Length: 120
Image 1: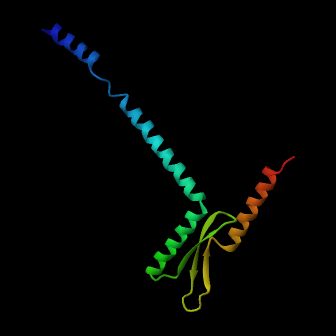
Image 2 (image 1 turned 180 degrees about the vertical axis):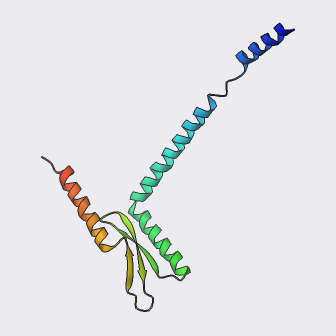
Image 3 (image 1 turned 90 degrees about the horizontal axis):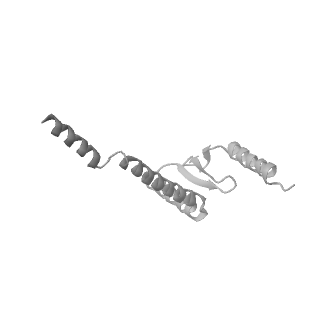
């Protein structure tokens, strides 16, 4: 009887489907999906019209919440910024990132462009 049980275990091991291969397949599918999402996000980030719509939508939401915060987009550095505004005077109290930081970023991008894009 022990011979039969040992033989049946060997037959089961040889004929049973291996589950080990299913995990890497799912991982590859998940990686492919992630890459598609990342590519789509990059396209949306670079589309000026989509960015403008996003900024307008954020500002509408801030108006609904009755806050002193507005959003904007700087084309030179391709970055969003936030203004905190005093309601009574309309004066900008704080800006994130600051004007100096945005100016520095624009100058650094210009310098990088001069260094690496210059034809020799």
